[in-house]
Image 1 (cartoon, rainbow, N blue to C red):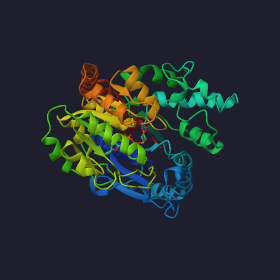
Image 2: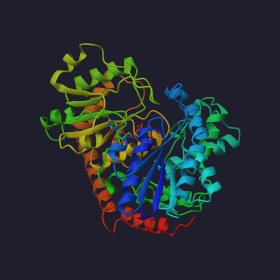
Image 3: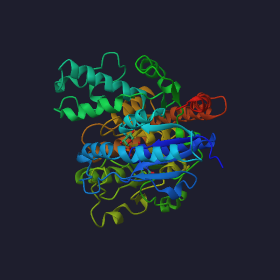
Image 4: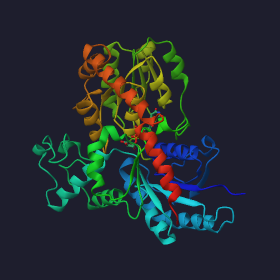
Length: 450
Ligand code: UDX
């Protein structure tokens, strides 16, 4: 019996990367492809959430490495080196398997897993790159490389507020790295490796053409392969669980008791964290704002995440009924809940797509990487959020929460987010841009031959 054409996915081992890759798997499966997920053992996805996918753990030999955020690059380097052979062996087995012979349509990989390029080239298999971030973020890489080539880095601190030429509306401070600081050369090399697409035949984006048309067209002049924008993936895919951490659903019962649009959801994704002082200032700011809040305070969790401070003992009683605290929330369900009226976010791209998809306006508090670009888009270009800059201080927190949740300004921001939500819906519906792009991608993958 034949399994039909197969797509092998190679996700990067972080929540914000695994989620869109698994969603893409569900999208492609709905178009008839059999899905294989070849993943590192580190931060491996839970196969029971996708019983119809085949999961292949690739021995990565990183168990003994330091998994703190600051050591992430060393962990990724080791994974890129150690997973090469296991992936090759698995693909060779597939190619030699009678049932699967000739059925590998392509390998889709996250650009962070750049070892895949060498493996597929040796085996003469076609590959496609999946980018989980925005086109603007990829263009920002180019800016960094140009500055590096001209020996301009680090930049003076005074230049960080300036606009980047030819990258409207972004500023130097929005770039993927803090450009005023010295950086090890390896960081720039890694950026280059993840920017390049090797011999890949196409790029799949978790973005929406209408949002990023200009940046996508500019990139099309650099990467001469077809682009497929299928965003937001989670609205194109049948719903599925993709969390690495256990979701605490008790917060949904708490939300059920709150008034419509009254609750601020506070979550910094899977990596960003607050220190002790920031946790306390945020807690008092939220309490003083007198708005109900649902706050995700992750455990001290070292797998590629920053260590998160916890509230001191006894503080839950002070918060009382005003707030609900969880260690990890079912975020998409939370954002869909009618009680949620705002989202304090670190501006991870998945979080932004999920928030806009439910018409929930944001308080933007970016921390690193693509989050500054995403925040500028949300707060200054699309006007779907307010930016919280500078040190966290309770008075500032109280003020911005009220601006978003109570003031007229917040209502306008919400209305704009709801308008965009409708555009997202149109995009994924039959005839919409993302839907059409998926049709084209399905034909494209079907036409690939190894
Ligand atoms: C990382 C980067 O930080 C981000 O900037 C990049 O765009 C993708 O990779 P992360 O920080 O985890 O991701 O943020 P984000 O992209 O928002 O992804 C987090 C995911 O975890 C979201 O899909 C969100 O729904 C989920 N989540 C978060 C939960 O399910 N529960 C939570 O409590 C918090």
